[in-house]
Length: 137
Image 1 (tube, rainbow, N blue to C red):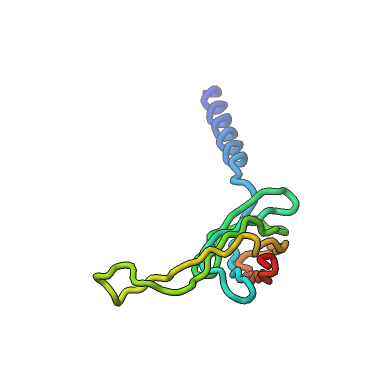
Image 2: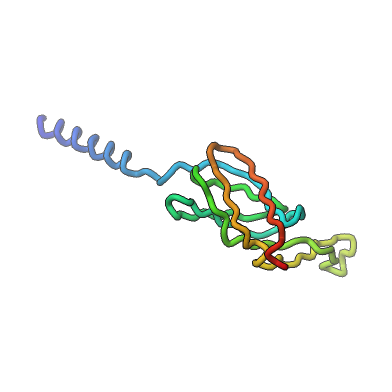
């Protein structure tokens, strides 16, 4: 009987240790925002947030001019920003002339050479990031 109690106690201790040891890393918070160039929104693309203290990177997709993601708290440097803008519309299928689709043009990477940072301090923060476009000149 004593052996059985020891086995149960050992099993409970092992389960507790495994539960405490299974952390998923730093806690993340939800953020949203927009990215624009000279006031014109970046319609589609992606952005990488690099933590200034750890160097850890987290990414987000830009869709319809906005990003919506989860990142760790702290100061983040924006890198690897890629984007496209809407330059018109076209009819993708002649059988459906009333259905138009957006026509996109890539924004040159040199537009995003300005150093931009955000400081994430709480959940559900919103950031509006505007590049001047000076890097393209």
